[in-house]
Image (tube, rainbow, N blue to C red):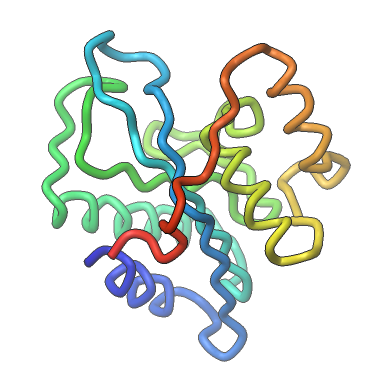
Length: 166
């Protein structure tokens, strides 16, 4: 199961005493980009609080750990935006800004993608407080309203899938 392995990896780089994990439910969404014949994806977001201070080296190490988990679950990187068994993205880490060949933080277009915003919205509602976003001036309800105004179908959580992905 992915969840216990992911928690184990996160505890390896986080300030374990204060680590808080906020899991979104699962959402089923159409793929964005890539081949037209791809099946829908299951998407979710995990917000981690209490992590070690963000640095480029720590971000690179975390990305390597996430990609190792992807490989463990059968991911093979064949084509950009192609079908995949698992895709673990690092969206942002505090105020860290990074742009190199391997990692861009904050993740490009995260704030425009319903498959990211809908799970974040679910976490914020359940948690009962506003998430601290990479752009300190931005608020999730405003980003959601802007993204929803595009006319794209807004993702809904899958019923009974709060404990993903077991």
